[in-house]
Amino acid sequence: MRTGLRAALMASVVAALAAATVTPAAAAAVPANRSWSADLAAGDGSGVRTASGAVTLDNADAHPAPHDAATPRGAEGGPDLAPTGYLTLDPRTLARPTDQVDSTVAGTTPAGSSVVVDVRGRRADGGWTEWIPSTPTSATGSTAQLPETTTVVQSRLVLTGGPGAEPVVTGLQQDARPVAATEGVPDRARTESDPLTYSVFATREGLVGGTTSNGHVITDRDHFVALPSRRALSARDTSDYSVKVCAANGRCAFAPVWDVGPWNTRDDYWNPGNVRQNWGDLPQGTPEAQAAYRTGYNGGNDQFGRKVSNPAGIDLADGVFWDDLGLKDNATVTVTYLWTGSVRTSEVDTEAAAGAVEAKAGSVQIRSAPSTDAPVVGGAADGAAVPVVCTAADGWLQIGDAQFLPASAIPGAGVVGACGGTGPDSPTS
Image (tube, rainbow, N blue to C red; front, top):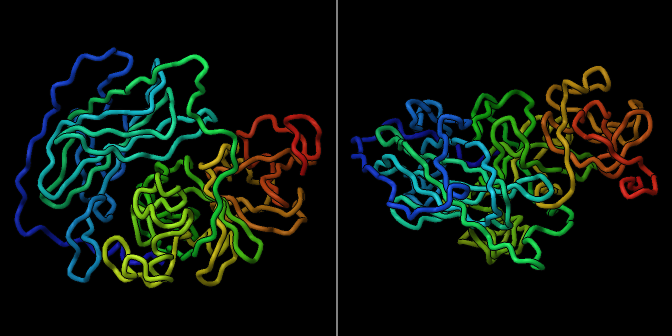
């Protein structure tokens, strides 16, 4: 179960905090194809209000979450929670490749509030890099270094504040620094690779009726997961970042990442130490909470100084926990972070699958063979990204070893080679 990330917000601020107005610094002239003013009105928001060309944190609708930066702890030793809202802006196609995006924010940031610009890039395989929080370079400026070159970038505003300290963004100027194209020098895109897989401890999230970090209202027997870093947080109702979770009982589930937790909020533990946002000295694949609980790392505490009472590295919504995986208690599971590899994925559509196969609400049942008579071995959440391996007989698609979904459940899979074929697009089953 989530441990403290959703403690009640402070009822009020003792005194209103004075707002500090910020304006963009003067910028040198740059080519039009690499510099632009973001269209704030066109963004998809959660926990924010957009009106008259400005974006304002909406305390009533924002998700309570720990401040991204270090902040004073609450009276019980836990983090001070603050309303946090997101505005995901439209992707931007560039004339030249880039691996660095500079941002300048205009608006007001009262004391106790913050505005951070996250940036990501479209990869050569069609997926996205993780969100990279920009590093401050001045009072109003910041920069994000992307892990590979790209010609499509997307930004996300993260507003954090509180009653009487609501940040307002009135403008966002961005500049993509072009990468010099040198003949004979390969692009820094990743080579073909399988996604990363690690064994971590999983806990049940529960919290039905609550709101996830991306603004999703949690329903009964819901299907999503939480990871302790917003670098892999999908926007509401999307599955840019999905995982495959397998339990010791042989059942597996595919689900999108819609929440941040457990324990920490800056622990992308699946990344190598030189990339990992915090705790780069830990082995890759080891959550900080696991190290704190089992070996006393960081004094046995999480990033906020709370004593870690379980080694959780992933939270599972009830539908994933009970229905798809058949778990009865918290347990160690194997997690595959699907966006970290170059494996092609397609989205699950439970409505399209209706009538073709029995499905619980929000999930399509995975069968051990391409038949409705085959045993159920897990579930794939509506909208989750799944790797389509090959086409099996009688309108079924293979998505893993002895794991099949009806083709109708993955309408965007396109043409896929037959299982057991010999052609380049026909993997063996």
